[in-house]
Amino acid sequence: MSKIEGIGNLGGEPTLKYVGDDKKPVTSFRIYLSSSRMDADGNRIDRGDWYGVSVWGVCAEPVAKLLHKGDCVFVQGVLGTDRWTDKESGEDRSAPKIDASLVLPYLPFVDTLAFQARRGETESSPDADAAGAAA
Image (cartoon, rainbow, N blue to C red):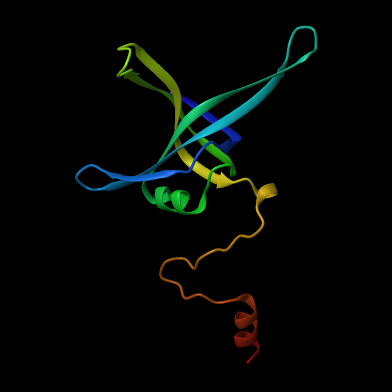
């Protein structure tokens, strides 16, 4: 089990599904993660790979709702491999995948951000709290 993390762009719209008897949410999308390294001669080598990403549970629905094709995100998770048989050729295929434990918008590319109140708390603004404390 290898951990992986990186910053990349979504290659398409996220897809939300509910699976199993308990209808557990899972959002899937593809992401391009690029990397660079120096070769033995000191030349920079740029390369990248496409990964299928799955986000399970409580984060699946917000990811599907908030992210869109082209968005830049930070992804952290466990690296694995999807394996299947091609329906047309009958050949075995594989592709790298990430079971994400964390997906965050990459803030340099975010224009607006809104937080919701935590469960069980009422929504209030800092100005309202200061006014209540002064009274």
